[in-house]
Image (cartoon, rainbow, N blue to C red; front, side, top):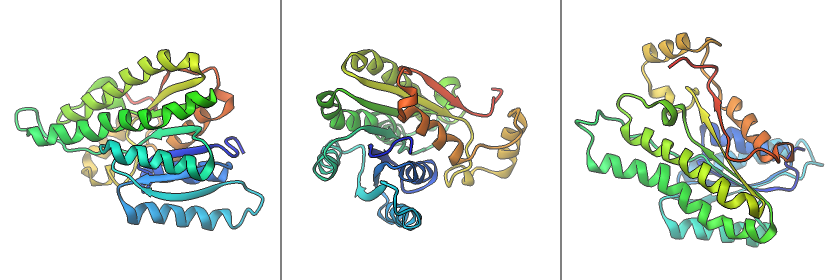
Length: 253
């Protein structure tokens, strides 16, 4: 029960890394807000959590779904207010939601650029502003931003995504300095190639190439990232602030 009774908002929890993280946190006693624009996927995550928790009657975990487009500031405020009304406070925010709209820079449209920046960079800024006053009020909190190795090293055809994820790292390091003295820790993880519904659309040849570039000779799993997030959200990590932890199997770029 590493996050027992903690109230956790996880964006993009309707599938992939977000879903795996939500399930893991609930099993460890957290009360989880499944925040996602995908209503079907979000409710499926809640159903899976409820089924698992029914087997552990002593577990304090809980979950409910909140529809959220993180690029919409009003919605982020509403979700935060609902979480406080239901559970009393917000202890952890995990900014996991993200989209890709890949194209070479010579062919990338303004719309492709704007939508990725709005969701992948402005979205986390919105959610952080929505929850941070409550964390400061209680003098404790953890904010964890899911960036990417693409934000560290760049990637062909992903100027928008790489820029957003690099910006998220800059946001993390800045807020760690601003909020640390108020008891709020801010960290980031930078996953490598993780097998999710998003990467499932990547051609098999590319995935095999990524495996070959990874010393562990495999793609990561959502659980690999989820356990890292669990550690950062736990009290065991209470002296880690402003860090960017790569979860990439030692990928050689």
